[in-house]
Length: 114
Length: 115
Image (cartoon, rainbow over all chains, first blue to last red; front, side, top):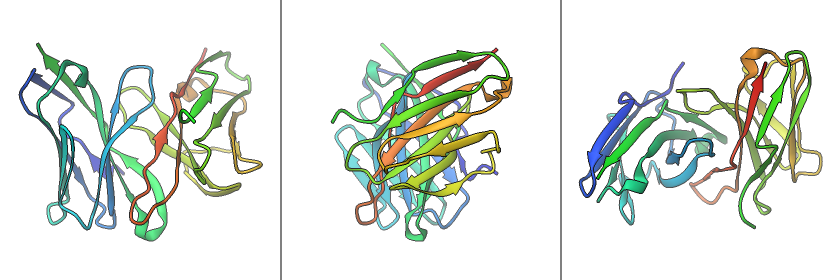
């Protein structure tokens, strides 16, 4: 069963504007969440993460928000740049239960228009 | 250390042949993971090692698949009697838990094509 879902397969945004990517999860035991970026024919590159004890984490242009009650997280990219065009994956694990494997969503393809 | 490396990057084989992939993790990381990714999907967990011990295997890992990490450093993933359904990107990742975080860093992957 798909425990992590990204319901938007694609997103198109103009350069300089905000990109908002969404992710929902069903397993309430998940306590660590990550976003990865992937270019074709390459492995996923780690972007940013958040532990369940926080509701926001920021790193440069990237901010991740976590809403535990809604089992929802989002990634904000501001401002969007052409190099941000890639597939973005949301992932989750249960570190508190020593369950380190990641469950991934199906990904959202972001296209940044000039 | 420049990150996780995987070899080969591409492998084309005929159905029924055996293939072996290698992964070299980030040197100080004690956990090593294998995932498989097919087109349009996110990576799916196959198995993971903590040091040399294989601690978990997914039900996706049929008896044709075997993984080893003999000295707790590099790992190999072997697929015996390959089938066309094995065609996928095989990804390796490594991590080291720190407090409440355990960030996995991925290698470039091995693209397997079974003809």
